[in-house]
Length: 259
Image (tube, rainbow, N blue to C red; front, side):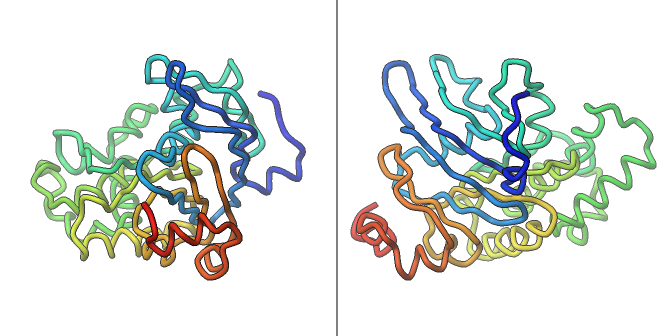
């Protein structure tokens, strides 16, 4: 893989001139940004502005969509993930994703968490038991499910299912956690639990979250990136973005004038 300057490894993710096309239609325009390690970065902007599309460029999920063309570079820990010889399976282990709606596998709670480690070659029950417990503790779900590990994951509430999906991701020990509106389908109490979980996880991981909830972005993120019509309009420290935005379009959006 091509590597950037060693100083840039201090940036967990560095994006250079990303352009993305769906067929002939351009969805992202010359996106440049950096995300520091062990932070929560919020991507905000109105529906259809490119936030989720951009998020998927960070672990090459857009590769799965027919007709997508991408130019530019994305570096994770200084390594360009768009190099032709990139191991995509390993990349998605390092840069995992939690989706808008919980998507547990139709199997037990235990098997959901153990699925990834098994795929990556871990077979010993004692080791899997340890990973399952550790991951569920990290996902703040252990106390709620420890007595029903072998019950169907589909029997859990929506909020529990979403935390299970986060636990399933953590079980393969990623470096970066991508979250695409992870609380949009949840009730306020479940949303609060996910927000608290996000704050605790940044001690170990770098988290990038797409959210339409301005209060949520202000509460949980360290950095905010404002997208509009496929362009990155403004980025910076969350407190500054929400109290003293430099671009009038940013102010108009966060104050509810549009979006």
